[in-house]
Length: 542
Image 1 (cartoon, rainbow, N blue to C red):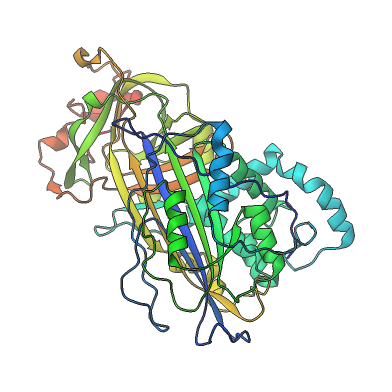
Image 2 (image 1 turned 180 degrees about the vertical axis):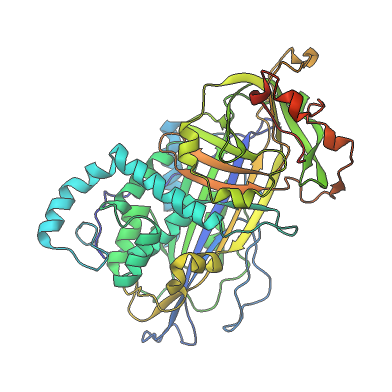
């Protein structure tokens, strides 16, 4: 497969100062492990007849201590919170940090780069005339606003389609996925796909109508690396295994996957530890047998609210799981918080935006009282449309739960349900290496934390809240999207039905069901006559 891309820029993973007592929101690193293993053949036997491709997306240290046999499933990697603890680097010092990540690695895998060519058609191959035409214009076209918007829409559609396949329940009450991370993994896989398999991947990535899809994603990642969202990738190769040079070069040139010869378990753990600022140690306890190729991808976001919550107002409160159950949570409160919020009558939901510094936002969609099936709501959402309809901010009382959640899911069933089952059966991945290859598993794991950021002196401790003050209380199940403001691309998506799943659920009493979260009686008839009715949000499901 042919592509066109500018020379890969340095992979950067900034570290940030978490010395303050509180943080705003940290979407903790999501890492993806891409394993190419030989089933039933020795590594020295290069006449490989069957290869399997195993894709991990993990956020926690340590595989199981037991060794993995050839016929046993590779154990999953659990999740831990990953937050940098070192001071944030200034822009002038980021280059040495990146150079350290590259130069302290073991032996680098080198290959003579093929000439830069353009994206081939899904059917395979492109004419010399097409190459010359696209090679000169693809870089410029990928930087156009329309290309950025098209890419953001592609990431959003894939993310929402996959989110619709993730079901919540008592054992798994919350869902957190990164459509950016999933798109990145599938896009890199598309570099090694040919013919019908490439068409399938590009169709579901919604890149089949974008002549410069890979270059657009490359430029998008470069822009994100200059914000609070950091992306780092590395490609490990088992000695003796030689993928096609074009795949190695394109992976490095487009997705900054530095190729390195794999010399052992320790080097992988050391790189992961450096890339996560020391928060992940002993990432792997063993390497799977017959390992040929491994791709690690880390995505990390740490943002500060534009309007920070004062931790002195944080207190215990209840979150209504449904009309019969509630759970205690730590509820942040802003007495006069600038919030953009509106009611969507078609969705029967409230929509609010909590902005961060550096052009990122947390978009919240909370069904109205009595509508607690958030998963069903996601099938109707167009988050770009909701984002564009947000009104000007107004000052109101806001309540937002603190939470720290982990999520893991095998995506094979979800990907199969949306039409990508061929990847697990008989895909054509001949652009990676000769011989049949297939994707044997896709594991996605991520973590997210929301807290306050710092503390501001305020006289609001004596604030008297009256009925005339509008308010927004996020005290029941909701949908969220962590979005890039400039492109409106969702970096993370999720559904939260219980922000404190470790706490015991309590029965909702009859008395509490008649009170909203600021302890005002709920009376639909009277409230609809209140001129502030449309600015008052939140309350227990009825």
